[in-house]
Length: 315
Length: 65
Image 1 (cartoon, rainbow over the protein chains, first blue to last red):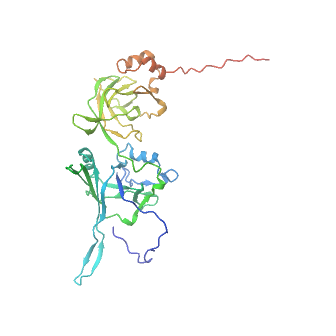
Image 2 (tube, rainbow over the protein chains, first blue to last red):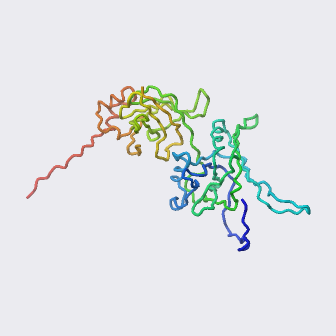
């Protein structure tokens, strides 16, 4: 970012307090859509923190947000971080002197150990979005930028700079996903700020992202219920990892034919087949009705699962 | 959309029930709805979902005038 010269006020003071915090090495990144659907920046409104602390309730509301457009997407732990600016761009004259034109671009790279093609696919979905990023450092600080009063905002990435790739394992190295991106030229390192770990009561450093859940073909469908197998996309093609531990509050059913919500009377997780759930409705649905099953409309989600909506047609 | 809270949810075995969804339902209707769907004792489940909530009226004391 071009820095305006302070011609009218003189240079900035160069003193420092005797003791002050600095950023530690990055351990995780939190990807966000930079703009919320209403057009405002998807930042942390400091006034919304309880007693100035970023607590678990706040963190859950962001990481388990039912609205994917405002959700925080925390990466697994990152290794071998590089986060450096390229050399300044200068103009050099015939007498070999040079003048500063602009800072070089800041490029970030990191590795996700045991990264796999499923995670890679989800990372690739970010490529065409307008992305912002917060960093979590080793000390547990949440790092963003502050150039808007009352907010810690995500750092804007350069459009189309986000890249992810799979690094296959070798005789001496584990399989990994790598991510890289470039910080927008509109950003200024001098705006970087943090919420210090001491002001964060949430378990930020161990916060993980949500896991996708996909439904199989509903079975035993009747006017009062159905069975469905819920799996994550992880695992083998014949041995997917099931989504276990879901309950009544993790689902919502909407009758798309009658445009009305369907009250779920009960949800039962099979004790025999992991991830197999039986749904029962309290009111009988009509033949040929199309039901849509989704995450609950009101968040935050109670588990670390994000259910892809699926339909059930009443026979 | 119904916003469930923990007070409405009763867990019996591996099943989470929405307690509110059984209002107005008889025991026979409940047993018919769940016939063949659950391995738990339906009579026991019904007891938990539809406890006897009738409040006993306090006995009126005769005036001691």
